[in-house]
Length: 159
Image (cartoon, rainbow, N blue to C red; front, side, top):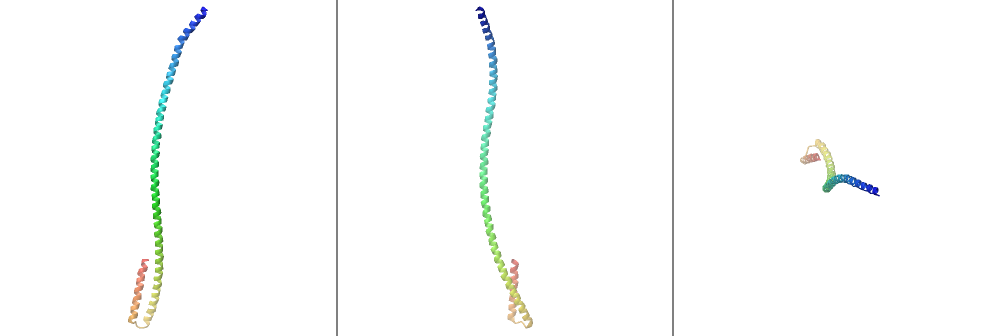
């Protein structure tokens, strides 16, 4: 029994001498792990803060881009309406000019007919005049007809 008591005390003393050393090493290891984990946590917190700041900046940037796009869309719609109004105005002007051209062509045709008629009358009068002496009234008529031909030629040059 004494021997068991002695073994027990030896084991107990060994346990006490080894225990604190082993516990100290374990505590040191845990402290190192804790320090490492705290550093890792600080790094992650910094990264999270940076990501939040990026998110806020991105949100503000997106809002700015959206405002710009809305403004540009409104400007483009206004420009489109303006161009459509110009197109309609140009179309109406083209129609008006086409009608004026048609009227002018009809007038021109009428003037050409009158000119041909006056030319025939002048030819007839000229041949008649060459056959007999001119009377004063016929001379005036011939003069008036020639003036009409000249006026028509001037008008024709405008078209």
